[in-house]
Image (cartoon, rainbow, N blue to C red):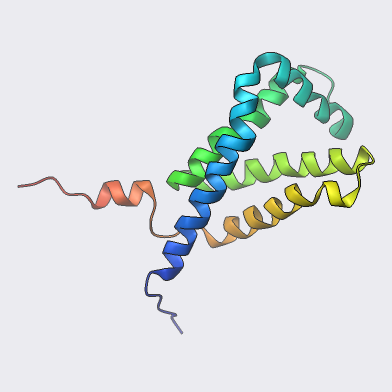
Length: 143
């Protein structure tokens, strides 16, 4: 049995992708990008607390920054969608664990938990029909 959609599902996915993607780019990623190496080193310290990784904390902080900023751009465009969801989800799981181990409680971890649920669902649902690659390939040069 094949289910037919009238496009509203794809429009809903587009709105969700763009909204969540913009939040990751502007609210989460951009401040970390602008914070530079000192911010990345501080952020990378979470990997030591959570995973016991003590070497090159600036690299791990940069990777988290790239996951949030670059992953947000990928969500918006629908490019490398599932890998972007997975990388952001991993970063959020580190954040949740860091918050809970830091003794801040479940309430303080609610936002990254909620975003994790959204990204986990998006990972399975996919980007939908309205993505940059699909739009570009559908545009035909005039004859």
